Length: 289
Image 1: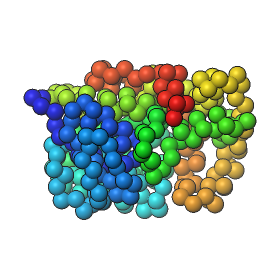
Image 2: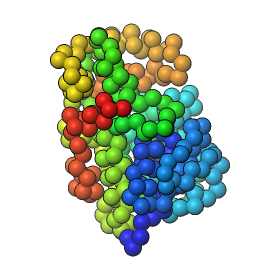
Image 3: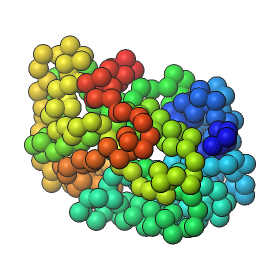
């Protein structure tokens, strides 16, 4: 492309969104970041307060659609309404989905993501679908997302608790992707011609290798100087029952905690040229937070 496209980012005040805006602005993209409840103040980013469904014109060349509802009772309907408006803008779209679309357990959130992916593919617009697996990374100084990221919580537990609570046997696998690798791959693809075969595709984004929860905790413990990190194993059914009493928690999502979430990151790596860092290296950012 002859110039960098200007970007309109929904969900810009979330963890991934704020990091995306920070990185994109630092690389010279013109960025407009939409926030609703959590103020956004990042160097080089034009912060726009509002609701996706009420924005008439994004004022940018490409829409980076990161906003999504997960825990709300009507999350599927809200996600549908947001995507209605985003598609109506008629701009090329980068849709951040979830690796949960591959999971055999058909929870409502996964169904919502599959539905939205199909709508993007059939929209007639130029698109990229990118599905992050457990994004993680440092906190941004001065910015606090509305929802605490799970890896920030896990890193805090490793530093402070004598034993780390886990659901089940901790042998289920994750493939965490550093937020800068995920966002960097998107920005690299935005620099490619939209007529190329790297566009109009869906990509999974993950670290180089799947790791069990036990391995992830061991790596965090080792990087923080702990010689041994004992686990406090919680029965899966007990966690599911407890979720019914926790405000904002959807019990159906608890059932996914003990499932494998392993992906193939190579297609995105080849298309973007961004090689994801290992968790051993990337998790140091969590412990500096």
